[in-house]
Length: 314
Image (tube, rainbow, N blue to C red; front, top):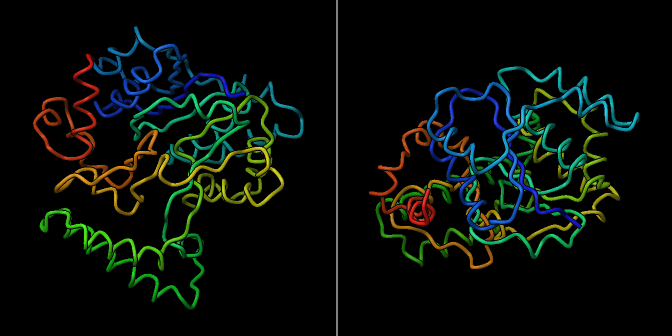
């Protein structure tokens, strides 16, 4: 059984208000849960960071101690952590989240999430992971492999993106155009696993296999230690140790269209959604500007969700 324990990881000095909202959304939907923020080089004098100190546990990352507790067959993962560039904190975070879940169990969330409902129905699984709709040629593209269908799929992807963006930004989010976008997505997209939200009991075989595969993974390749690794592990027998969740549970809006959270008439979120992932890597310049004042005045989908969290008292 998965313990009702939530984990976040933060590496760096900056800590925007949207990060606080991610934690507050968990606290409000799971008032009895243990919430831990594992950090390295935490912010100093940051009001949103300090506001959370009375509500959650802040725990410095103790990589040496974590590695020491691993079985001998998995200890080589420590060398892989050392190889991850300091300029690539996301790669380091990928490894750390698997270590934490394998050692302690619980639920891991990225800071670019908002929790909407209780995760309690998922706790009886040995582990869980969500699927999302992504560009079907993306793994090959990232690896530098160009298949025969890449130009066609790329063109359809571009049309789908442009259509969806124009629809939410200028055309009133018309359902007929949303239907056309969904039709195009059936051609250019594929359902793959993402690691922004994960759950596991301690010692789960799926995350043991992930840790085992890390030393033979190219730590410098984008996504290699993240979604690509999760999909590799799922191809092994370890998939029997984890529950695969439909895209609507965590990723009802695909990562390539997360502008729908911030622009134009708000899109609908599936009623099955327990959380949303708004993909901060797509909005690096926008995220720091989303202060409390800005969000309280906005009518975007993300702002409306944030307003509910703020209204409950933070």
